[in-house]
Image 1: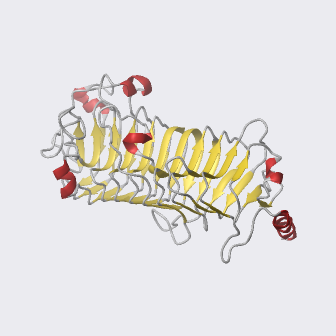
Image 2: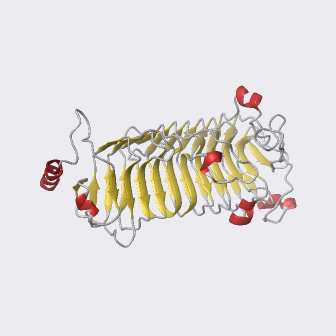
Image 3: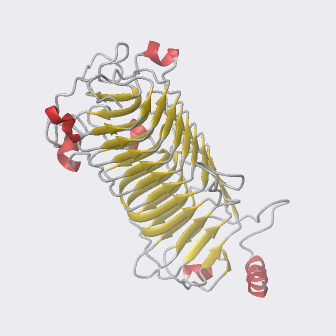
Length: 406
């Protein structure tokens, strides 16, 4: 306590921060690229930078910044750090970021929630080219999926809440993510991973991410997608809740493999609850990233999906919609022990997108549905073996006739 009080006193005396009338004291945007910046930033409130006693930055309020906190690692940055209880508000411009962590490979790198709030930036948290980073919102619900009372919040960010790219061993846990992202113009042919203009980050987006986890987080009205995996493998999406996305609560695509989606409670996806998809044959994404395969979707509850009348009238609803959809040539995926209910198009769907340049979405739209029409195969023993995809032990109200009875 004496160290914290002494250091805070020095920082205030230095003139960088000043106290607000209530809540955390304000601070200018924080930029750290080397170890000495932890001293010169006038932002550290405790700690010595070791793995057992990391530098703590926060609580601070940072307002209307292009980037609220930017920490870039490399050879000159070796100290451990924790970002704790920050309040960051931006101007909603797509290029703005609440917290940007890049090339971080130190012993301890954490963003701690509880009182952390990131609002009205472009992207709430962006992690790039990093490993062993923990983003802990502090609100994991011990009694079931989603979050409890004390979750950190990442809300109303125009591109999305959390974007992780080209990284490994990232843990995301215990956040409330609300009203992040934008609808975009989804690419159902090539599944182009570009944020603009296609998908947006939405809730949590992994692109080129391995051995990482999204757990006990809640995504509400985050678009285009609640949780997405592009070109990502050996990741886990577990014990989360999500609702009201445009287009889906989970998307796994572009060569993503050996991922687990388990124990989640999803509802009210406009078109899909969970979508596992390969790009169509001949697309650059399939050539570049390879096939999507060997993903496991187990023990999830998906319910009440379906498009609005306005979406149907606008022609933007894909003809292959449903609760849990396996699309195009993706292979050796296992769909087991899930409960799926009340979805337009069906609960278990095996289908292929049909390109159609006359529709607003570039593929056949709904109605009618197009199911059991798969002609593409990237493996798994081919079409006679359902591309090696397995559906077993699911509780459903309706399913495609080409899928074995559950």
